Amino acid sequence: MEKVILISIDGMRPDGLLQCGNPFVEKMMKKASYSLDAQTVSPSVTLPCHMSMFHSVTPQRHGITTNIYIPLARPLNGLFEQLKLMGKVNAMFYGWEQIRDVSRPDSLRFAEFYHARMADRTDTTLTDSALRCIENNKPDFVFLYLAETDEKGGHDYGWMTPQYLDCINVAIDNVKKVYEAVGDEYTIIVTADHGGHDRSHGTEMPEDMTIPVFFFGKRFEEGKVLDDVSILDITPTITDVMDVPPAREWEGKSVCNK
Image (cartoon, rainbow, N blue to C red; front, top):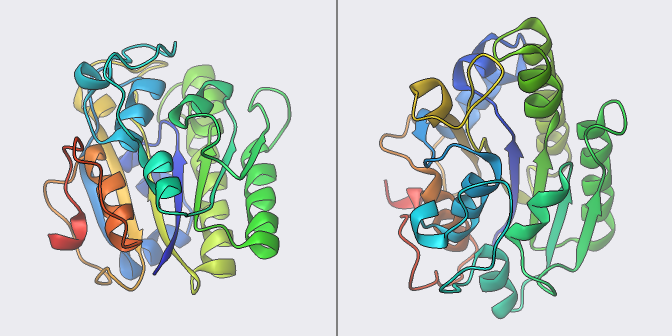
């Protein structure tokens, strides 16, 4: 049974990733199966996108269409609940408070929150906390949510500005840190929830809807370019890797089968 780390870099566009200047990006494309034109859901807004990422259904199905959480009209198990049902230990480290709603109460063993607006380099602080938790506790699944690319890069300065690209560069430094520390022990998935344009997002423009996804691990061919990948495929892929049955309602497909 494999353990998994999912890293979501909020608001990271694929072209921003390629232009951020971090040399580890080239290694990511050599060592992972990946897509630079995966698609998110509409509306391309942080909480709806992450609810779809973790529940493998569209916002029209789970009912979250803004950054304000409302209980699902027809509840279904998300990734955290499905893993807990099978006895797995979950952890979450996050830089935006509302993201906690992707998990139900009692589905997490470990959790830590640092608001991206309250300190410099929150992404790095959260990454270091996640790695300490992994070293000490070895949770089965870890969600590391890095908010600064969206909060301090895109919204403050604009997508594709030097400040935005610098935030991606820092986020990828943290991906490298995780990969080098525990890449032999964990399958690592790196993605984004949405892109952005100007100083906003939420439309169906390609700049908002297109996201990168990287899959590092024994189940994934190195350097393979994946076609037709959706944000809905991430959770079914994780349960496939961890040998956990998917929830019946999930709509995505494991990319292990692509």
